[in-house]
Image (cartoon, rainbow, N blue to C red; front, side, top):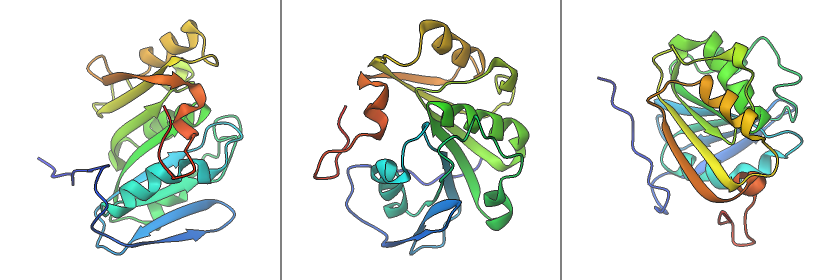
Length: 188
């Protein structure tokens, strides 16, 4: 079985990292020989820096993190993802928030052999983009006070992932996944 490096979000350790930005991506490059990465799609109209808490935690643990800067990643879906070809030796987890979760599911469906797992934060997913039969592990996080996604939207998202997906509910609202306090901690 594949060995995946563990992530300790409470750790303030391990690797320094560099942030490299261009018009398409913000990339967190750890000072490590990364074997795994995290490709993340933004929630609609949310700037990449709102997910710095997540990218920094992963980069400190030695993961290469690539955040697409397309703030309409599902609506303006691009058929080609350069991250996989730019980093051919990295096995990626793919994730996203809200409509970015839909983009993550669609991207995973098209690149099943390149994806180690999927992380969805209150995703908005079209049932046509299902990965329920992909055999890829999925972590689904939802918010208790989500005022954006309707029960039908949440149900559709669950139809698109495997029945044995890990699912958790957090205290907070739909935007809690992209909100950080002044000290950089996630507010739920």
